Amino acid sequence: MTMQPHVLVIDDEPQILRAVRTILTAKHFRVSVAARGEEGLTLAAAEQPDLIILDLSLPDLDGIEVCRRLREWSQVPIVVLSVRDTERDKVAALDIGADDYLTKPFGIEELLARIRVALRHSAQGKAGGEHIVRSGPLEIDLAEYRVTRSGVEVRLTATEFRLLAHLAAHAGRVLTHRALLTEVWGPEYAEHVEYLRVFMRQLRKKLEADPDHPEILTTEPGIGYRFISDD
Image (cartoon, rainbow, N blue to C red):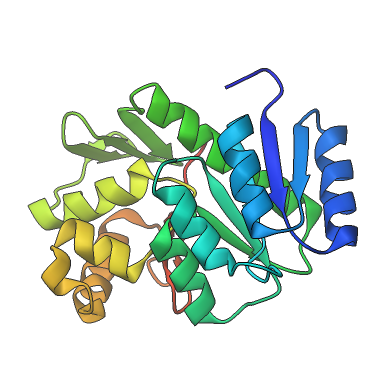
């Protein structure tokens, strides 16, 4: 990744393009913009940006289709920024390969935080990933299959650890129910959300200070879960 991360913004609203470009330029990002899906795909291929901010409602292509086509050849982080805020739209975008989803109107600091998380995750992936993930008193050693809380080892079942490890390896990103079920249990369990809920309850009892008000394993209602790390 360059010293000035390069962000491509694909959105057909001129005021959004101007606002995001102004915000990111002030934060020392290099910014390219596209007002149509096909134009965005062309720029993505030509410029190889470090991150893409993508609207779903474009005049020529649906943003879900743009995301799908990008994922055919690139793993560039994609943050969806859209007025469409239904669970169905969010799940569709995340399942097709988006890294995160923000609805308009959005907060500047929240947008910048999501961008930082996506860029950090991308950099870790290119470097081979981090073996140790920390969240407050919790430490997860992904290589040694070991979890400690305040220095005391926490005993997890194999399935619990696979679920926790997958969330921790994608810290900061929201992972959909379908993505987690497919990764941990297999494609045939993609619709068995009750499995996931049971195991998330078990993990929270073992890892959270207050399982009823989780701060590490947070819920994205109707969509999935997010692991909150210290980084």
